[in-house]
Length: 261
Image (cartoon, rainbow, N blue to C red; front, top):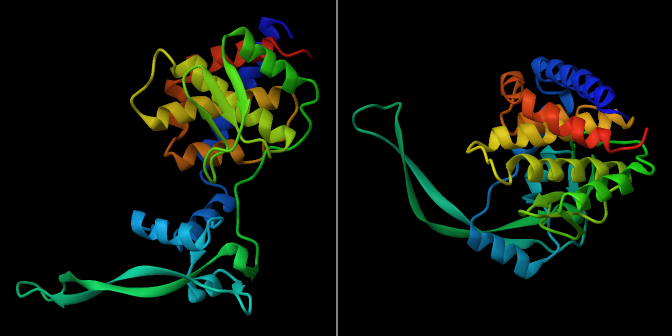
């Protein structure tokens, strides 16, 4: 694909992405965030307690919380003990509607990991699907030509890829389509943010994901709502995209031009 064709392809994809961002969050993302809200954020101490009792835990919640999500703890499963705060509420003397919360210690409570439950699947973001064919090899060759080392390794739970300044890490258990999209995203970080790094994470993630979306679309992958949901998760919107459009278009077109038609 020549430079003019690559630029045209990028322009069309970015226009579609802008329209998707303007429409707001997808139903899938809303459901995902609603579910996420039912999981508590645990302290470092409780994380250590969870890991010491079940090191492969990914998402934990109490018996009732799982039930609200349409999942049920299997009979015979051993719970994980964590510490929950004991909080008393007291109305203030100045305003009966205001309450003051006072910590009165901690109590042991039992939670269970998702792997210990059965029932309704937890919602997830839409995934990029399709077959990148030889384009995945070409994308890795593109990275190598620009001095970017690509490795495949596990990082942290729920982290698909990472850019570390000259090196890109991608989870090894993704589908080829997801690998292509994640690799495009992390390469975009390297090209856009290695020397000129915007202070705002919203801008950085919007730019990188917009590049990944554009490149993925250019080779015929089905992106569904994955890109717009991802950008909105970081509070990105159409205005954020518009401010970075030139930078995104240039990097996306550069990558696309180096992929065979």
